[in-house]
Image 1 (tube, each protein chain N blue to C red):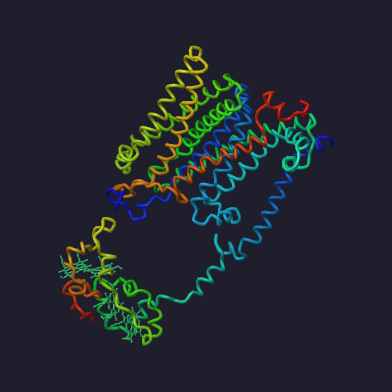
Image 2: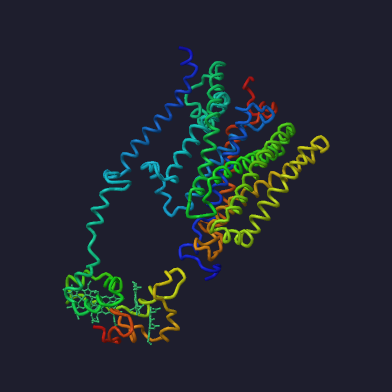
Length: 397
Length: 161
């Protein structure tokens, strides 16, 4: 059989969890990470990252809207998926995920964004015209109360929502790791560390994504990048990445030391089929290089010029995004490449223009940027004076 | 009072949730089948629908009533625990009315290898052959009686009695 070496059970030859299932934890990870960055400002009062606070929230929302789509594309009968809401199945982790998702979307993200933007929404509902006005009117929910007291209440409630949001973000993404980690039949996945590793890599990737978006969008808008902000983000990114990497290595060392019956098979796989995506891309290029660069910046920050720092951050951010994608790939695809008999290996052949092919994956990766673009138009996160004045001529603030 | 006034918009947002929840309940009422959850996490009425399907398999007791000769050979051989219809396919229609439905005899070229082709996935002590080498292209029943396959346990080649 083509692509099969050694012995595979018949149901293992074809991979059923395709690149879209790689994409799905990647995208939810970006959501969780972006939200954690927002919470840095809100709950942990890291003032330096304020310029990214709203952008992070909108990014989280844009990616969250996209997150279930890879799953829908993967399903043979997507129209049946709402049934998991209508007939909740409490003992199925996958079925319960729908509620976690909905909770996070509505009770955390949408609510927090709404509270944070309420003042602008109300002002815009009075200043815009036509369809836009209608949209903003609907978003006000019919309340134009933006008195100081009301905004103060919003501020307090928003803080609580963020507080609830942090564990929710951890849940959302821990859940994804849990779904893999709890599959006891698969030694590559079955590990209680899985949810934790997923969360930390999610945080790194989300922080990196928001940082890149912030830098890119600021450049596009011809504004100056707030270096204090980016430096702080890079610092947190570095710390979280160190923890993430340590955890992943802990998992690895644990597997090597435990060396259970699956070990030879997995070890062989890491040295052959996964060598490029795991050792080269994920660990060497995607982790060690950015860690080293970020470390250098942390130590010699004052001797490195701004422009060089920016370039390093862009490089590191991109490498991190690639690395975390590679990590998801290695988990999802890697976990299906070897036989439970430990006697053989199969190959993943990505399709191109099919429902679960490469083009669908690329489309679904770009789609959240489209969502984000709309969100940025509707709810501009910038509060620098020029653009604000330009867009809201009569706002009077 | 003014706390309610200034937090009024929050109640509106909460009302959104309540409305969404009510809509959910109404939709749920209509889309979830009435008998769902009666016995378990499925539609109880499906049981009756499935029970109403026509029978496909007659069961070996039925075959044995009429084919007592084959049944005797079969019961004494190595295939005693392989059901008649595992090889012959579902034959309820034939068992109901043998004169109008005559079953086709199974083709041993595809039938026997389904269970006996050598494969690492089968238990080691299960009898297996590499059919191409083993039979030399001859049909299995030239040498084996399908109903009592061990060599020497009964005549083969059409003599399957």
